[in-house]
Amino acid sequence: METSIVEEIHTTALERHPASLYRIRFQDCDPFGHLNNGRYLDYIINAREEHLLQHYDLDLYSERFRDFNWVARSSRVNHLVPLRPNRMVRIQTGLLNFTRSQLLMEAVLTEPDSRTLHATGWVEFIHVDTRTGRPARHAPELMELFQLISLNVEFSFAEDRTRVNAIKKALR
Image (cartoon, rainbow, N blue to C red; front, side, top):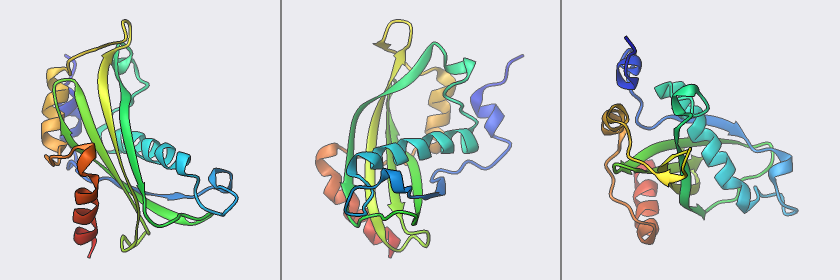
């Protein structure tokens, strides 16, 4: 009998705010020596993909997600303090909230000691049937997982400044 996603990951404590350290690569920077604004989203998406695999055993390229997966619908990045080549950055991600067919994830980019906030980012993903390209509902076991890891934070892209201020306050 196949085990559900939630049963598989219940063997370890669920981390609702996974974080990893990344090195800013020279080729990702602009002529001013800053991480190129367009590359922030790449770092954010890559970090989230790694966190999903490491903390929830969700390999988005596995057979399990062949017919149903997620596509980015909208995104927003706030660039606060420049990131420079060869510097380490801590990227923390989390699921802010979800619906039957949508996920809203957040990323917080800080110094490794978490004292300086470099950037924040949000990406809204839509669950789709990869065979038709149409939106699809999440499977019940995914909804169960999302319930366990969701931060249950209300957020809209129009309120990003309020959320940035709340993150800064929490870092103090």
